[in-house]
Image (tube, rainbow over all chains, first blue to last red; front, top):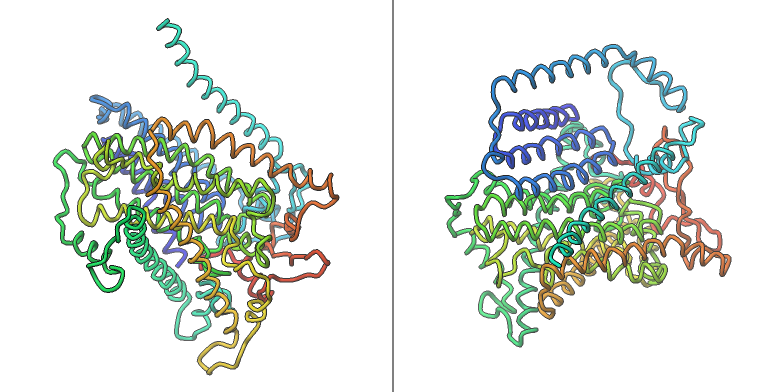
Length: 196
Length: 435
């Protein structure tokens, strides 16, 4: 059953991604992107990574794509509404995509997964990891994730968790927010002074 | 629905049967959950639309529907539905036909899938996840995608203006909604909706709304924002009839038009349900007389075909709890209807000002206040809480093991398991898989 669900989600993710490529209307591309990203979130749910899946839904499907469609709706007119690619662009993009695929495949095959799994199992005290197929762990990832962001880790690794990256990202986001608010305000001030 | 049988999930119950393979058990359990929820999704709007007509009639000194069907005109919505099914399914010539047909379904799917993580009683949810509260807001926020696409693909100015307004409104109102929802979540220390509701068992002052002054105000801010998020009056600029004909659904007719309203009324109930769970005690009555707790342990002898682990008392207590939950949620829906027919509509700039200049700062202030409240109370009284202890609930287990619920400790130091048997509680919280 899990395999069947995996194939359904993986297939819709791939079909969505491919349809983004071949469709020419920008808004339809966005809709296919919803299909693709939504299925990826379904794949995360299948892996019991429920926090990542919910974040995927909230940020990519609910947030980024809404902004994307919104931007397309407001700006798209004439030449930007439909994207016609020339064969040369197709070849170039295809070459880049093939290179990326080759890099990913070579990386996947070069990593000695068994050693990584063994090390993880010995560090976390978890069950021994078999080569090949493993039963996914039961979900409930939100609390360990949140704690490790605050500097607590219970998997035996004696580190401060991810407190520093978490703080850097949050300060970065705050800077972006303030900058966005500043940019949005500045235009109005210029207008007023010009009018006077 | 998960702990109807104390075998923790319906799926596990089916797995016990020798005739059902594990794949079919999964499928059957999923089917039953989806069937119950889609019926709720269809029937709740039916009742709420009738209620809307009656309440608006009374508020405007009319009687509301009386002629159609029996007493109080209760068949009115059904008559509406039959009328809508008969109508022609019209697609305008200017429209992007595929997207035009697709977008009402997207709105419906978003509103329906939010019901999947909403618990109706202890353990009665299709999915009890550790990120339930997070996921339900993520799913509710997907509704706006369908609305924008509906407005865009209609090929009509009114619809486009309506959907742009709607997008601006929903995206900006999500910020105070999330911050206000965080206030009780921080106080409880869990994102699991089932646990949040269970923390509020017992007397009324255990409800999160009475936890501290900040949660008290946060409830009203949350409810205001949630009303705006459902695009209900006085925040219904997206479908302002006097300005935009019908807003984003101007070009829709028949059943596709009614899909938008099914989604709207259902998400009205969902946000009311979230408000009930986060602030108003979930499925708890609020009177601590111990009868329900005793009922949960009551297990009379049952006929042979019922599995031994089925506890009748627990089941009855959950039925009562679900009724209480639906009643509380419907009460909040009634308040939304009441507000719609008594307050004038805001202008679009007023809507945005209300959110960005008032509601976001207020909710940020409340959030900070709610965080500092335990410190303040601790400095003043030496006690970080009134009544039931909050925030002592982080289980110190490793990530390698599934998390288990730490029994709650009451003020007199006695460990209790909040009206459920320990087996079913642990099973309900530690099992994050597909139910």
